Length: 104
Image (cartoon, rainbow, N blue to C red):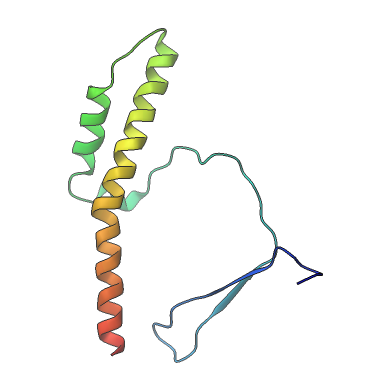
């Protein structure tokens, strides 16, 4: 711990084998704030397009066009983050529940 004070270890779920993989990270990199991103799986999820469209249309432009674009993207990011917690996270918890049932 004195030699590598920022070392962290993570134990992954065992899904196929009777062993658990261990991941060791030895450094922390601060990349700054997270950029706006999207995952391809979201585009196939029901309701994603509606969330983006509604958030984009609900945003009002103020000031110059760059400020308006920034505000629209910020609004879309907030709405997609909220949607992700409600829809996608519930699918992940369902997956975890099924994995536990399979393991039992």
